[in-house]
Amino acid sequence: MRKMTGWKQATVAGSFGLGVALFLAGRRAAGMLLSGVGLAVLASEYREPLRDFFEQAPDYIERGTRIVDALSRLADHLRQGREWEGGESGSPYLT
Image (cartoon, rainbow, N blue to C red; front, side, top):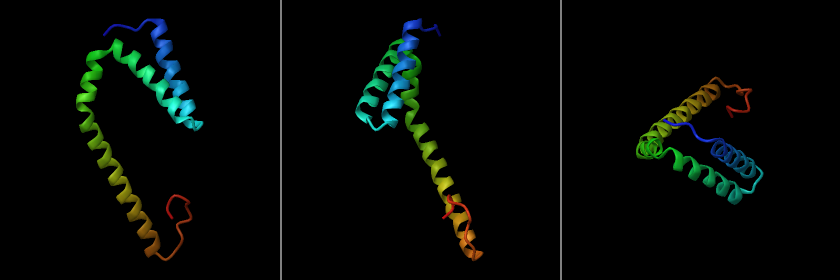
């Protein structure tokens, strides 16, 4: 795999960084637009790896969903265990 030129690296890093900053600041449309620019530049340089990634994306999403479901069940189990013992959990995360 070849290395990106300096201006492409700067464009990708800058657009993703500013996109995240704008998204977190509440300017979601501008953040998504800048992130899209970074993704387009990245895709122009690495077509095959990105094509492979997007073909496998449903598998990644399914695995991620299973992990989140398992963590949710674990949190419910821990929450129920604390309630069964009759005490407060003492943790803001296990309410």
